[in-house]
Length: 166
Image (tube, rainbow, N blue to C red; front, side, top):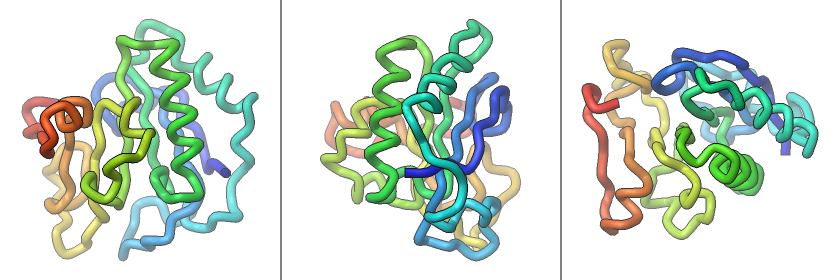
């Protein structure tokens, strides 16, 4: 598994100041994707144990609200194991901070995936240029949902947040 970049203090990918990790590799190739340099699965750098530890250390300060995992496609079969490993290690170390993940896969397509156990919020659905809306919070097109993952798992149905709830 590979990653493209790490942002140490990101204020655009989730609420508060966050550490953001952009995984490498995506097969969706959405038209006008904001991050096309992450599409090539061979690009970026290797995601090692040292990189995982560096990310966790960056998340240590109290002012860091959480971890954001984007891509590329963090829930692609090539990347989902690394997403789960990172999210699990993060939640074990920082149980009161949040994990946000962006994926082109729908929540329903990810049912049964272990990574969901460690994710607080999933922004799901591919970016659709024709549904682009710059007024939306934390997503680019109106088809994408902001999902409360843990509540959705407990209730057995998709529970979404409204823009004013996140």
